[in-house]
Structure formats: C-alpha cells, structure tokens
Image 1 (tube, rainbow, N blue to C red):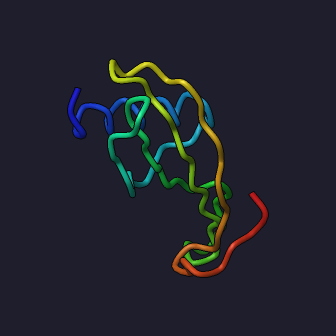
Image 2 (image 1 turned 90 degrees about the vertical axis):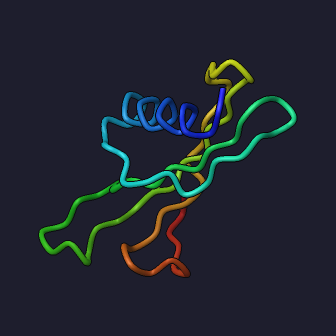
Length: 87
C-alpha cells in the first residue's frame, strides 16, 4: 500500500462516515500500525464561502488499508487555520 492509494481510501472513508465530500488530504504518513491520514472537509456550508466551517478528521489504517479508527480533531473557519472551534 502506498501513500496515494491510502489517501484515496481515506477520502472515500471520510465521505462515507460524514456524508460530506473531502476538500483535501492534508497529511498522509506511515505509522507503527499502518497509516495515519488527515482529511479536511466542509463541516457546515455557509451562504458565503468565506463563512464555511471546516473540519479535520484523523483516520488510522492498518498496513493493508483497513480503517482502524477515526476522529474529528478540530473545526475551524475557512481560511483561518489558526482559529479553532470545539471538535
């Protein structure tokens, strides 16, 4: 399993879990158990794009690409990476 393949699996997985299409994979790296992937998506769509609320999800996979766990790690206003809402 390589990073491109696991990123695609993560995008599909987070879409199935949340019902929202992912915007991007912001991190994908090997871990002790397999892979750790961070996916960003629009959590709450606003009328004005700048007011969208984004969410970041961390997904953990085994070496074969089986989803082991996931967690929403933060929510933040679009374009304000430093600002955070409660996860």
